[in-house]
Amino acid sequence: MRILISAGEASGELYGAQLIQVLRSRDPSLEFFGVGGDRMRAVGCDTVADAKDLAVVGISEIFSHLPKIYGRFRRLIAEADKRHPDLAIVIDSPAFNWRVARQMHKRGIPVVYYVCPQFWAWRQGRVRLLRKYVTKALVIFPFEEQFYRDRGVDATFVGHPLADQALPAMDRGDYAVQHKLDPAKPWITLMPGSRVKEVGMNLPVMLESAAKLGCGYEFLLPLAPTLDRSFLESLIGNLPSIHLVSDALPALFHSRAGIIASGTATVEAAIMGTPFVMVYRVSPLTYLLGRPRIKVSHFAMVNLIAGEQVVPELVQQDFTVEKVVARMNEILPFGPARDKMIEGLASVKLRLRGPAARAVHPIDRAAEMVLGLLQGRLASRIEATAR
Image (cartoon, rainbow, N blue to C red; front, side, top):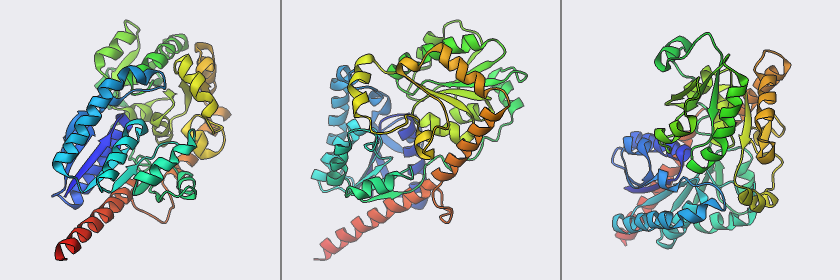
């Protein structure tokens, strides 16, 4: 059987690769094609479009990229018409993927939406798109299941894909040798986002903050798979103590703290137990258009999950060097502020795992749902043939 899978950014591409790996372990005959990147290609997905081409952020920013994005969309649909998938899995990236879901629905192909759009945060009326075009929604945050079910979507909370992530095995000394770091200094991880535009908006202030925090620290900058190394190097310039590293989780695990852009990276920091300051900035026009539509009290996902402010949020005009440095200086030293944040992050991690009685990894739970739909599809086909 053949599965179309579409993931349009770094985190979605990671979850897509994990899901393919588990599904392949259960049924090696499954074939995968769609939108992804290096991770999905490494586990056997034939990518007809690259996730890098869809990594666009912001209301105003997306317009200049529309021709390229539409071209990738047409290529994917044409490939689906050629290969006739038995099931479609779309992961996050709602601007692109709800259109994929609609086209698959028109063709009678069941659609699984894994990592659902955050319509609970803004544009809640768009839930109707999931209700109309999606067969099964697999949600990764505990409060999402009830939200979507109340609005007629068949949704199941499977847990966050990273919630049971094992802590990195490499010790701090070996990590320091590998990346030419000074083990005597505390390290701080900078995560400005996974898309070119948001990195351009977030990283310069992070770098200024790093310079102001001083030479007593070294700074780790994980390279997201949707970004080119040369792009980050051009922004860093000749700044000392900034080290590009390959993976985010080991960097976070071995760091004293982080300066983290809003998004999946905040969940990664929580899972690694690393205190951080959440920051974010978009263009003034995007913020002007988007802010009135936001329906939640917090921007940081860890704060939404906790139902209170666990980490500070510095968004738009509040995202300044002075405020970043002030908040970092509260959590870098040992003391009540740092201890309270670590305790809050541990609570968030526990909630992301889902009910304790379900001792199954979130990716395995998602795979079970997908395989159940495939089996139903196969049974329907056999029944139709028998007639």
